[in-house]
Image 1 (cartoon, rainbow, N blue to C red):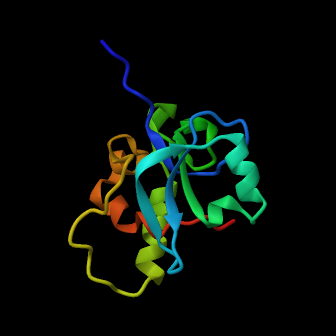
Image 2: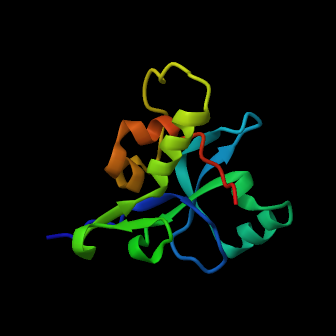
Length: 138
């Protein structure tokens, strides 16, 4: 049986030397992320150039394989088994409490990583509804 590829973290920080990082979106002037239709591989040369103009995560959205328990956002399951990303739940709670009421989008925005997205696997369309609002905010 073929092994399933690792889920992707849709909100990773791009760092030199990290394997599997892809550019998946661009932050627009309205502060929302416009997803790319095809993820683009990120290399150290891209990151060096992007860093010359400030923090890349403020202008771009990156994805990489989810590292699960090695991530500060990971919430282990009962008895340490399983688990999930805690970031998307916190984001959804924050948006519900602070964002002006908007009608839900008519459909899902295009997303090149949805099939492997950790947030999609956990929260499906509810995660997609807030995904374009997620930008780097240290």
